[in-house]
Length: 117
Image (cartoon, rainbow, N blue to C red; front, side, top):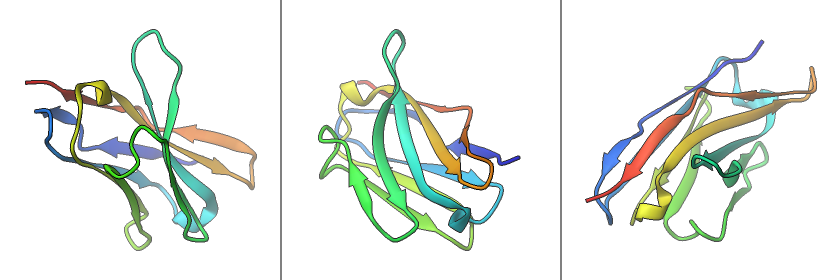
């Protein structure tokens, strides 16, 4: 059983910055990739950013140039640095990992990000 826990959400003004954290219960090398998703009520959960174990980082077009995903392997933690935030970035942000050895997806409980003046 794997656990991932998100933290760092909150209320921020447009143009501001926020850093989210995703702490995993085991080494990040257990997962091919760690993903950040976001979801607003009534809409599907969308992929925001991915960090792979071989060092690749990918982003949704809507956040390219504003969000940065990074990892600290010693702390088993993946970060999502969000800058130049817009009201449309308001959502619940979820961390997701896929554990190949049991073929399961694991999700955190989510952290709310609200961008508003």
